[in-house]
Length: 255
Image (cartoon, rainbow, N blue to C red; front, side):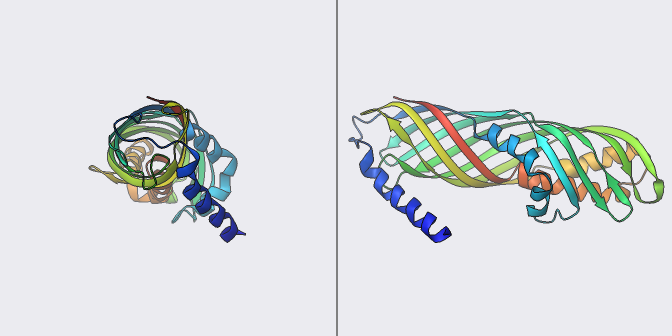
């Protein structure tokens, strides 16, 4: 079944070059402005997936449940400097919040999280078949802030309540495949579905480490007693908040 679906997708991609009108570089619409609602849809999908997502995240077998969702949006401006090559600038805002449950031995917790993220990204796109199917490479910067609070069982310290707020900076990079559909002879309303995978490298300490250190001070315990929290949050950080699979559903106008 999976092979049949993949075959159909490949056929659609190759056919796309002939479905929409192709123009010479001199006359083609070279600029596109889009707004991407994909991050919001993906973000709200995290909550319903709950424990299943915890099982899917590498290294997150200590996460019992994830319920993090919220509004996120992105805007992008793209310009073709060659018929098959374009560059784009993209800004992304995210404001998810929620909880996650983790448990490792005697240590456990259900911290409440309020998260804010801002990112600026530079993209280079290659359109191998003309103006429709594209390969997208990205490098960018992201700022992620978290306010965590709740009751924690930390090693032999028993149950304690605490809170902390921290932020970190990241270098982002990744790639995605997409399909730009323009409903017009040369420009007009545009829809761009795309899917890819992003990674992030902290510029300094990761948010998971900084948040763990601050929470330990709030709870009057050692950071090592919250190592299970750090491991759980780090997995969510890498797979959901900064990196991991990325869905794009962008609407806009090409001119």
